[in-house]
Image 1 (cartoon, rainbow, N blue to C red):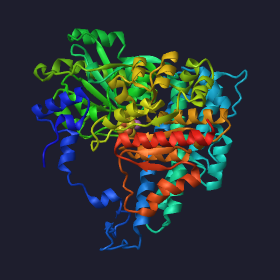
Image 2: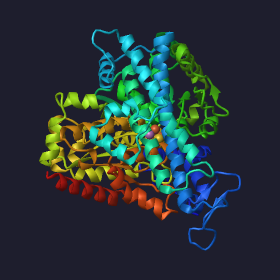
Image 3: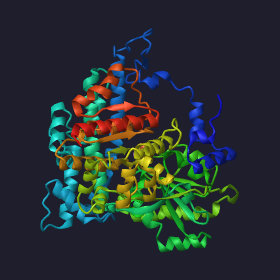
Length: 625
Ligand code: XCC
C-alpha cells in the first residue's frame, strides 16, 4: 500500500516537519506502526470477538453465514455490550484512580506532612460547603480532613445511596432521572468492580442491563472520580484563572535544558515545574552551558500546568514522539495514561532520557525514578538534576526544532468564567436566550492515529463557531486549538457575526480551554448551573458534546457520562459496537428516553457540525427561545 505523506498524517506543520525528520533519522513512529497493522481485524472493529474466557477466542460472523454464538452461547449483542462495558470500566478506572491519587496527596499532606499545602482555601471552603461540611469558624486543616473523608467514602462506602459528590453537584431533575433508570452510582470503585463481574463469563447477558450498568459506571467517573480529581487539584494547586501560554513543538528551546512532562497527574508535574526554578539547579544548568531550564508540557498533564501556571505545552497525544525527535529534549518525565511505550525506542536514537515515575506505570528500558508524595520536592529535584546532567550528551547534528508555536489564552475554570462575567452566568445565559450564542458544544480530547492529526478538532470547531455556537472543551482538543491560534480572542473574527460580537465584548476567544480530560467535570458543572438557572434539566438546553478524534477507553467513559448527563454526543471515530444492531440502537436511540442524551457517529467533521447545529436549533425551538 502507498505510504501516507506527512500532510496526510497531520495538519500541523511542526508535526509534519518532525515526521520528515523521523524518516531521515530512521525512527519508527505511531503512523508507521499503524501502517504495519493494516488491514486491522474486522471482527475486532465490529466488537464481535470475545476473549472473556478460555474457551475462546470466539467470533460471530457479522454476515450471518458462520457461527452466531460463542462457545458459551453468547450472542453478538451480549459480546458487543460486554466489550463496551469493559471499555467504560477501564476509562472510569483511569480517571478515578487519578482522582484517588490527588485525594491521597492531600491526605498525606494533612497527616504526614507531605509538601502539598492547600493553595486555594476559597475553593476548599466552596467545595466543602457544597458537600454540607461545616466551614464557619473552623481551621482549614479540619475542613480539609473532612473533605478527604467524604471523598474516601465515595470510593469505598457500601450502602446503596448515590455518592455524595454526585448528590451534591447534580441538580434534582437529573438525579430523579438517574434514580428512575436505576443508574445512580453508589461507590466509584464498586461500579467498576461490578462492571468486571457482570461481564465475566456466564453472568450478565442482556445488552440492556449491561449498558445500563455502563451508564452507572461512567456516572461514577464524571460526577465522581473525575470531579474529585478536578476539585482536589484546584484546592492543592490553585483554581485556574484566565492566562496566556504558548503551544506547539516550537516551545522547545535549543539553548536550554528541555524537560517535557507527559502524562496526567499534576501531583508530579506541578512539583517538576517548581523544581525547575530552583536556583542551584539553574546554576548547574548554566555550568553545563545551557541558558536555563525550560519545562514544557505534553498531553493532559501539560494542560494542567498550562491552565494553572501558563507553562508552555509542546503538543498533544500524537506529538509525543515528535518532541523526542527534535533531538533537544534532555528528559521526558512520564507518569500515567496516554504514554506510548515506543518513546523508549525513539529516545534511543537521541540522548533523551525517558523517566518513569509512577508505581503503577513502568516502561521497560526507561530510567525509573519512582515518585513518593512524602518526598515530592526531593524527588522532583532529583529528576530535574538528571535532566540537567544530560545536557552535555546532546548530539548537535540531530537537533532540529520546528519553529511553529502559537499563543493561547486559557484557564477557563468555571470560577474563572464566573469572574469574567462579573460573578454570575447571567450574561452568558442572556446571550444564549437572545440567540447571539445559539448554543454550546463541549468537545473532549484525544488524537487517534486513524484520524489525520488535529483535522477533526479544528474543522469541527471552525464549522461550529461559524454557526455562532460557543465551544468549550478539554484534552487533546484544547492543545490542537491552542496550536492553531483558536484560543486567541482575535480568532473570534472567524466566528459568526453574533458570536463574534459577544466574544469581542467580553474579550474572550470563541472556544474556551477548560483543561485536561478529568476537567470534563468542569463542563458538567457548567451545564448543570445553566440548567438550574433556567429551571430546566440539562437535556432541555441547546447543548451538545463531541469526541471527534476519540481514542482511549477514557473517552468512551466520558462520552457515556455526557450522554447519561443528558447530552447529545458526537463520536468522530467508531467504537467497536457496529457488530450489534441492538447495542447501536440502545446507544443512538433508546438512550434518549432513558437518560435524555444519546450518541451519534459521524467521521466527517463537517457533516457532524451540521447535525450538532440542527440539534441545537431544535432544542432552542423546544425551549421557546
Ligand atoms: Fe489521552 Fe489526556 Fe485523550 Fe489526549 S485527551 S489522548 S485521553 S491525553 Ni484526555
